[in-house]
Image 1 (spheres, helix red, strand yellow):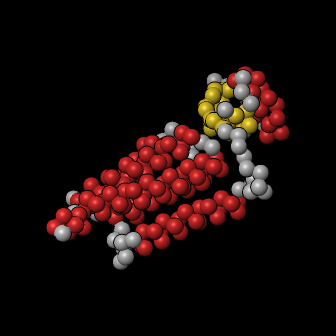
Image 2: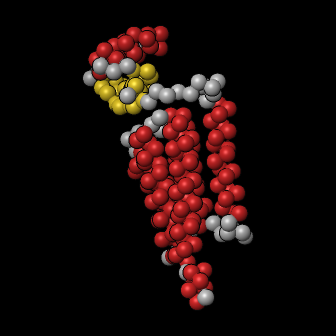
Image 3: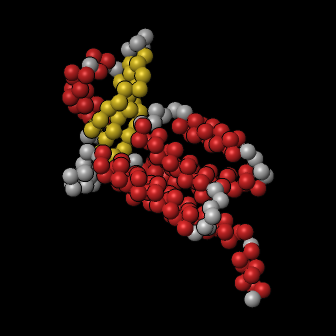
Length: 205
């Protein structure tokens, strides 16, 4: 009886349950929703690990009674440091903010019901993401995209092919030079004095 009472009163078990819930939610969001529709393995790994670290840092900050605003400011700094050299798409920014939100909510929020409260909030987050992806994704017709994509950044010297009217020529030229089937190209910046551009290319793995 004393052992059971000690188990219920020990805060480490409540922390462990919160962590397991957070981990399950992050895996569902990133692996089964984000990765399913984007196929970006690097971002999937980064988002999950970032969520875990934010949860643990939140727990630590809670023990020293730091203000929530300061904590969120620290997480914003962490996000800037991680992605300072990469222009995130709006979708990736949404998932990044979702990961931060899930970790902060599960680590700091106090619910009236410690079981139904977290499950309800996290279920709403998961369901909203799934429905939005299903509604707005271009391939929701039932033909699931099984092709896996990678991306990298290259320096490109044929600026004349950056004309939107010559996009097909650009894809063909970049594909022939990189020996990969390039599906999409995004212009990051142009260095006119050097006559080169920095391109972010997406290719089939």
